[in-house]
Image (cartoon, rainbow, N blue to C red; front, side):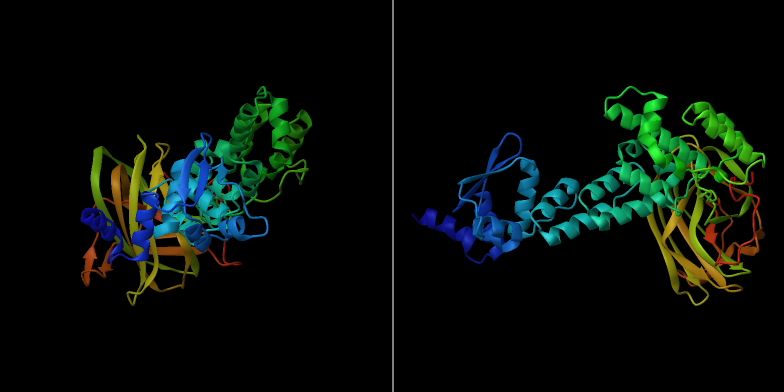
Length: 452
């Protein structure tokens, strides 16, 4: 008996409520409710008292005027493992980070466990990348989880070129796709938007078990097709990719060619807005050419430089060199400081890239306003495999009405010293926009390419 008594005291004496609750859950002591969870109706026992104290849904289920009277309650839409995670948080605030947060988020929202909803939302927002951004966006949309939707939407818009080409794009709902392609902030060439729409329609056609025909594709696209901004597609791209697809009618193709040749000043039904890739954002490239090394370089490289702008701008992001021969993952950290060493903005990101070109964009979470004729310092650390670097650094670069003056000798706030950065250069350029009325037209507006 002493042994039994000692065993009892082991989980009760000197233990907090959370520890005792955990033991009672795991050992099924005093349970007074049974759930039949998942498709296989696995039995999971729990305590009404705990559930009522943590969830208004369970409170209504057990205490309201329509309280459940059956001894076993079916929960077919949640997997047993997920329900166990939900209970572990409700009983003793278990750390669920690193688990299947998507399914836990669904369960937490269903039973209104608001603290767990916030934990899942924040956790998912931190792991958004090229491969999962569209999936998380769709899931957040389905759950009406606007915090997650906003985080994913911001990521997709800032990484439009890659996200629109991802596998997850084909799994988005019509509402999500419509919101993406109508956004002015989408950073993607307009021909990429067109191709993404067509690929999405193909995927949707197959999901609906329809034969993939131009008629079915056009029916699925509906009026979304008119959100493509043809002013951002060159006549050559239109002839090569759009007109030959047979998605547009002969009358539409003819009228668009008339527009290109000046015979018509408007495009019926199609958006007349300019292309988005460089509608809001402009790019300043620091180098005249790209240097390709003979072998991959695997190490952490830190680049830093100071610069001055001749007119006020909003600094929105940076352009980094990357591998153009293989998929890579880069870990980026950096700071933007003013002359008084105050941190104006920071970048902390992990980016997965494809072997399609020499550079990729990394955007600040918030744009930074920079005054003219003031000195700013940018320090960026990039970890990953790369064989492309900048060559032929330019001290002065003019984009529109804005001139950038660069200096590789910068003040290192960590060491308190001025340092010269003459190693391999991984920062290709800056992404910015100018205040209204401060921008000059550029010949690269619709189809800006890297100078080399």
